[in-house]
Length: 299
Image 1 (tube, rainbow, N blue to C red):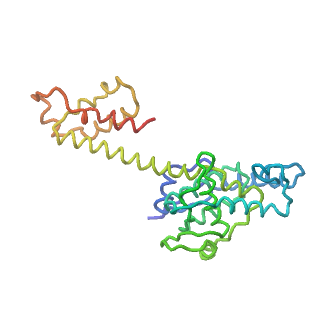
Image 2 (cartoon, rainbow, N blue to C red; image 1 turned 90 degrees about the horizontal axis):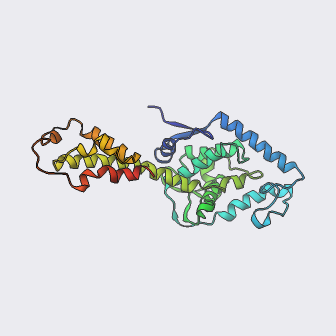
Image 3 (cartoon, rainbow, N blue to C red; image 1 turned 90 degrees about the vertical axis):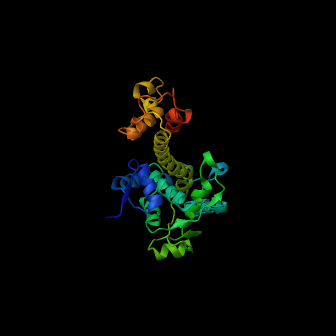
């Protein structure tokens, strides 16, 4: 069977694609349309860099240094210094799958062509993923909603050939050594590209995508478990009838009830006591299973 290839573009990346890259090592490639969009975006930044008019993060410093003009010969140094200064996390490393998801999602953001980064930046990120190299990202240090600056900076540091990475065989390697072995050139960042690499929340998003994928699987297991419990306890499927469930039109509840109806359809155990049972109703844990599991399916 051919290996799965996930195409990265500004619009075409799915949650399933993120999970495949993060967990199963699916290969990645930058879409042609994304490459063109990035080239156009990088050209805009190049024009701003050549202009006499100051542009934030291009020809100026950051934050309180926004009014400080950076000479053209020091702008590469500025971007590299930005990455180094923010790669200041601490603690145990973040899980491998989360870092892979984070790298992929940041590449997807750049692929939208709104960040001013050249295609080679995304290509190097995807090359790192395809080679099974995972930057070592400490668990603590993110600013959260203000941006996953520290985690993304540790990812970017590896792209520069600095810091450490974990190889596919779990060996801890110096990033420069690992890039060379994989045939990848360390990035030399141009104006704005350091900012583009770290100004986002892709760490949190990666965790969320993986968590939602796991939750979806758990909810399917919950419905299967509930159906088995109904059979084991000689319950009824009538509490899951579509017209009854529709009286409280909560979409998640309806989805869960429909799943239970499918699972129990034609069950000889449920049919065996459909008539002549003197119980008025099943226990809450059975008859309200769609309401409980359904609440988790929809916000």
